[in-house]
Structures are given as structure tokens and as C-alpha cells.
Image (cartoon, rainbow, N blue to C red; front, side, top):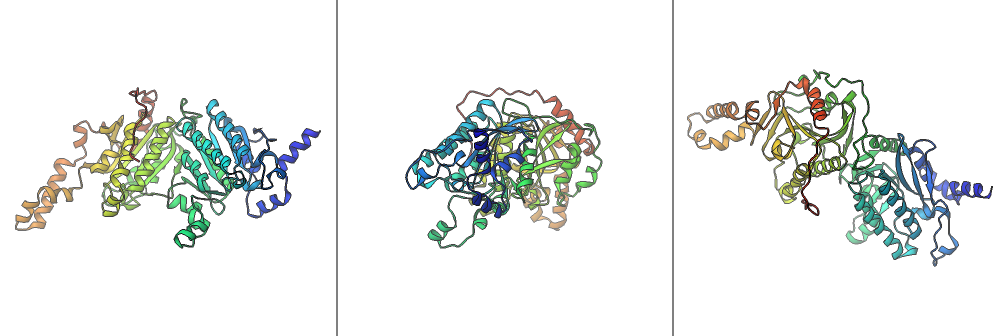
Length: 509
């Protein structure tokens, strides 16, 4: 009876007023969050009776159980997942030595068991009263984040403040979720910003969910509330393997693999300058029209999404003509590189839908390091060993064509729709360069330019030019795209690429 009473008291929390204040902010408790994340009744807690042993500043008189973090494991869709959740009601969720030790233990268990790790973050940073011991606790978390990187999926869910050095743990994980209105992340808070720069800024304006999902790109997912956020985390986990030694889980589908996607013929305009929403193309080729977009609010000129084709999980990258004509720029390159690398780490095949006019020109891009950032996407594709299939929907110009997983950088298969244009640049620009003198000397330069543009297009940009040279495996009927992808992915399912010995690569940073 004594043990039961103690466990019930721990679960309720030591301070009812702290619980009231927490709920007044519209926030769920740590245990409620864990309950929503995991399958009902599946949670097993680790070290619920842990208490700190620090002294000084009155700490010896405040020794609540759990020390402000709930740790353990359970299941999501019947598969084991490890979790830790900061309890803001205890020391404001601040990390101390015992608190850190609990997190270290559950992270070690997740890696040893080869199971995903989800962190539910809601803490005020390092526990100031414990000094350097608290800081060392963060060091242990960061080290484990890096060791687990590419080994098990790591997901950070931001459900409250995350300031200072604490923000680097989510940044080291594979996916970051943020809830609007209650989650903030920043290295230096508003007070420090004002003291140093004189700028006045609120917490949400500095590092809220809208900022990090739409401006900085730190968060891949934005949620309006905690419940929908945790449901999205469960959905994400359905695409991911338990670890890097397993294949992603498959889901049976009633959507035929050989279904003709007739609507594609009308979705993509023949005129390469006319925009369309590539998300509609994705819906037509994936199972039941369903996909889960990553980074939807940031770098919208490149769409990254998880979906299924014939039950198999795939990562899809697609240029988005609706945003900046689908050009590649600094942010799109960063977004794509991260997504490619994550999919490759967890054995998720890549499908690349190409309709790209090139890299965005301008001093802002060049001075911002587009060469370096564009090379990140190039490096990620070249390093990827999962099955890779490219489909050229319409146009593919210049270096952007190469970078978007062309055959020349290792795509296993490349297909193109009729009407595709693969070239160094568009016909207008090419004619102006190649025939500059001839155009200038003509009696009617405009008419001559038009003639030479058509000549260039007919000779070097016709749909079969790349296929004749083996740079495209086939030119396909757009309505057959889903069937072609399903057959290709099935054929490549057991693809294996032995890696050369090296300590690690040295990608552009």
C-alpha cells in the first residue's frame, strides 16, 4: 500500500499549484503527453523515484521525485519507442545532474535496443543552482545525440521553452516538431538580445514555432496544438524503421501498383514557363494520394515528403514551380540535403521529381554561399546508397539538372516524360550565347533569333536527345509514372552498395 501511494503521489506531482499554473498556460503535463504519444497502457517508466543529491541554495530542502523528467519506453503502432519528457512543474523542467543521468540512461537503452527515441522538450535550460554539473549533463546528451545519429531515429518535440545550450540537442536530432504559442527555441533570449543589441523582441518573435518552421528551417513540422502534434509524431514513426539495420515498415494498400494516373496529363502544362502545384503530381503517384510533407513552411521551392508506393515507404523530393519557378537556392539546397541524408540513413528509397530551371542567380545567393550550400545537396545524393529513381517531368537545366539526382551522379534509373527539356540552359538563353554574332549581324535580329531558338530546341532539346545518349533510361507516358516507379522500386529493393573504407566523408558545411 505504501508503494502504491508513493507511485500515485509521484504521478500526480508534488505541487498542485504548479500543476494549476501549468494548465493555465494551456499545456498538458509530461505524463499526459507521454500517454498521447504511446499506445494506450504501453508505457513502462524508468527511475520514477529518482531524486537529486545536490546541496546549497536550498536544494537540499527540495528533492522531488523524478527530478523533473519522466523517462521510459512504450509502443507506437505496436513498435517499441523510448521517450523522455521534461516536467515543467518540477524546477521548471531545468536540467540537473540526476535529471541528466536519467536522460543519458534512456538514450543508451534506445541505442542498445535499436529503437527510436522521442524527446518531449519543455524545460528552462540548465539548473543554475547545480552549476557546471548541469552543463556537463548537457554535454552527455549532445554526445549521445551524435553517437545515435544515423543509427536510430531521433525525434525532438518542442512543447515549451528551450533556451541556451539546451537548443543544440534538438538541432542534432533527425526531426523537430514545434507547437504554436507554447514552444520557443533560442540560444540567447530576448533580455540578452536587448542588452547586447538594443533590439526589443518577444520570445515567439525571436524563436517561436512560426519562426523556426518558416524562417530558420530549424523545425520541420509546425502544429497548432499538442494533441495534433503528438499524433503527427506517431504518423512520422510509421514511415521509419526502428534502426538503420532494418527496412522501413510496409503498409498494405488497395491502391493498385499499376494504376494509371491519367490526371497527370492535365496537371503539368506543356509550356515550361507556366506554374503548377507539384503536390498534385505527388498525390497522383503515391498510395491513396497520401503523403507527409517535411519542412512545408520553409524553402517552398523544393517539396520534401514521405509517402508510400505499393506499400513501400519512399522519400520524395520535387521542385515546386509554384514557388520561385522551382529554382534551387541556398535554403532549398539545405532542406533537400538534410532530407536525402536522413532517408539514406534509414533505408528509405528516394524518388526525385524534376522540373528545375537552374540555380537562383544574384549577388545575395553567391555571397551567401550558394556554391557551398548547393554542394550539400550534391554531396548528399552522391553519398546515398538507397534505391534512387529520377523522373524528369518537364525541364531540367544546367547544374541544377545534375544535382537533382541525375544518372551522372548515381541515380539507379532515370525516366522522362515526353516534352522534357534537358539542356545547359533554356533555348532562348542558349541561342543568345551560341549565335550572338549571327543574330547581331542579321537584317532582322528578332526574326533570326526566333529561327535559331527553334533550331537549337530541335537539335539539342528534343525529348529523346538524352535517351539516345543513355542519360535517361526511358521516355514514359506520364499516366504510367506510378506503375514505372512501383516496378523500379521493387527491382531495386535489395540494392547493396559496398562502401570504400574511410573514417568518414568531409561534406561541405
